[in-house]
Image (tube, rainbow, N blue to C red; front, top):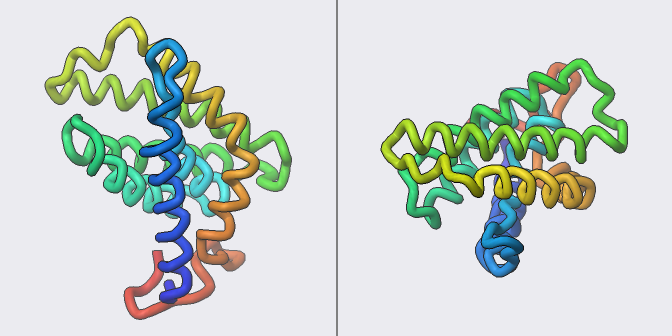
Amino acid sequence: MSRRDVGRFTLVLLAFLVVQETLMLEIRPGGVHPDVMVLLPVLAGLLGGPSRGATVGFVAGLASDLFLPTSFGLSALVGCLVGFGVGLATVALDRTAWWLAPTAALAGSALYEVVYATLGAVLGQPQMLHVSLVRIVLLVSLTNAVLALPAQRLVAWGLPAASAEGMPTSVGVGGSW
């Protein structure tokens, strides 16, 4: 990856993080707020395949974990799994279909929230599996499905271009993803 690719991805990551920590935390219908950071691994998996989805999910999760009171690394683990899963599930589909991004965002976000709560409970925070989990899943999934198309353009701009084999076309000092 070139420095330009790293810079673009960093800008996209910071944009998502700022929107999450400022705007989305203020929107609380029913005491639940949307989580747009989930869109990063979902869309990266959709646009770049399983490997890129896992990598972006890990990095976005680590950035999210800096602001969460849960176990550090939990968001990174779940983001990695969901990004890989979305990339794997959509590898044989026509990724240019307009409906694919909202559908992947809806399903990927629901999966993310359920796995996040389940692993959080396993790791010593049983309150994560509480009654409002259904509201959280619904709000996050629907919000991310609505935001998927505009966010897809931003994520596509921030990810390095891939060759036909799925590998980044530009390799910088640190190698490729």
